[in-house]
Amino acid sequence: QVQLAESGGGLVQAGGSLRLSCASSRSIFSISAMGWYRQAPGKQRELVASITSGIITNYADSVKGRFTISRDNAKNTVYLQMNSLKPEDTAVYYCNARTVWVKEVNDYWGQGTQVTVSS
View (tube, one colour):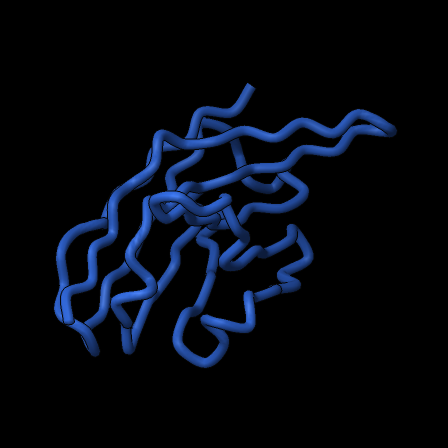
């Protein structure tokens, strides 16, 4: 089991910045990949960014060059630095942890944190 706790959401004006944090109850050394997803009203949840245990990152095209995902293994925390925010970034942001053991894949989710970008 992995418990995830997000923080750092809020209201910001377009062009501003926010940093989201996701603290894991389990050492992130043992987690294959961690990521941030978001879900806007009436839309499906989508991947924003992910980072593997081998520090390979992946970003949605819509956030490339503006968002940066990173991890602090000592703190068991993953961050999402969001710069140049746009109104279309408004959504609930969810932290995800994926563990892989042989053929068993498990996904764990945080409770979500609201990000609202005003124009």
